[in-house]
Image 1 (cartoon, rainbow, N blue to C red):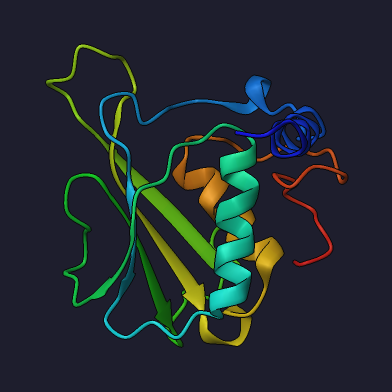
Image 2 (spheres, rainbow, N blue to C red; image 1 turned 60 degrees about the horizontal axis):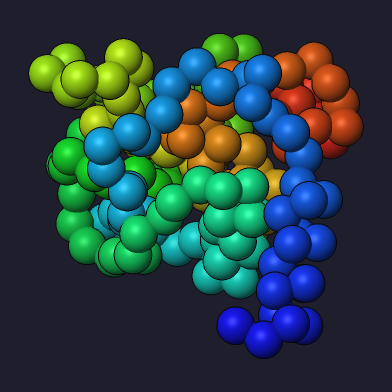
Length: 156
C-alpha cells in the first residue's frame, strides 16, 4: 500500500466515532454477509456508504448477496427485509433489528445472525441503514443526538 493510501485510511479510521461504550454483542466467530432478502429494493449507493462507514470503524463485513430468505437469516448473515407491514408503535418506528446468539460459542454474546426490517419509504436513507447495521453489529442506542446510534436522531 502506498503512503497516500495508508494516510487516507488512517485519517478515516481516526475520525470514526468511538462507539465502544455502546457495544453489547459482537460477531466474534463469523464475518457476516449482508443479504438483501426477497428482492429488497434498497438504494445501492446508500447501502454501500453505510457499509463503508462500519468498515471504517473496524467492523468486518463479508459479501453483499441478493436472494430469497426465510423469516430468520442463516448463520453468518445480516438479512435486510423491506416491508410495508411494519408494526406501528414506538418500539419499532421505521426500522427494526433483532439478532440471535450462538449459544455453543466460546465467546459470550457472539452474534449468530441478525435481521433488519425497513419500512419501504426509507430504503434510500444512508443514515437509517448505517444506524440499523450498527444494531446488527451489536451496538445499542444512545441519547447522544450527534451519534449514528442516536435513538432520537433526525431520521426518526
